Image 1 (tube, one colour):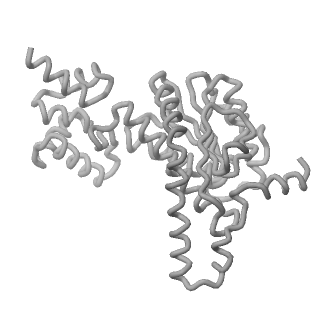
Image 2 (spheres, one colour):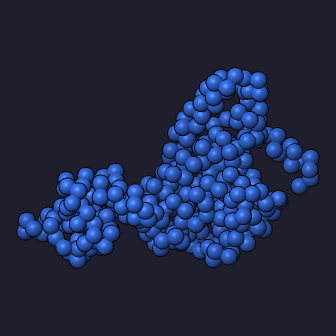
Length: 311
């Protein structure tokens, strides 16, 4: 693509447009500028709302992949890539899953997380290479994150993933009808031009983060990682999380602090098991038996236990 063709393509993107409401941001009083940013940010949730049906489709793809032993792999460049790496990094401590279940890849490698790697996103073969190195297969889902929808690194990764039989998702902030490549699910929230023209670390990134939050969080809920609305497979990596675990047990089982602490200790630090123990007064071995028999769903495990007790 020539420089003029690239310029023409970029000029047509919503994410590269000027926002008519922020022409004077450079001379605004501080509070007025803050109010402007806040007004623009309010548009993000509404843009995401319009994509609910597609986000739900993505959740179903990812949940199916997880149940089959597959992975969710994020690919992106710049801010989009960082968001994917961040979401992947937060899944193990939040939901107690293996670090290779959700993976983030950013154009230019890990050093691109804190400094720009010149030209890393400009070559589709870089994305293809990352997909090959991860040995992506039919059980996996690859999610390309690109505010502009045309990032070559992301497009290359998605094409290679599709070639290998993986399911593909894209999260972009330009209209769906302008998408120029084939994916299984396209999620396209369009919150409009940025306050600072082309700075997609603003509204576009907020929209993308909201979407990624929903994809992984709801997928984990559908795997039994949540009881009611509480995390029950979280890892106790620090003192705060140990105390949060005790609070969850207290609330879920309606027990006091000491009983929650006792059950957490006897469960080997597994909140889900500890809740079952606190509710039923059963030992850890019985709790794990019922939880495993019910595919990790605590509510189902408790129903099964009660049914057995009543027969």
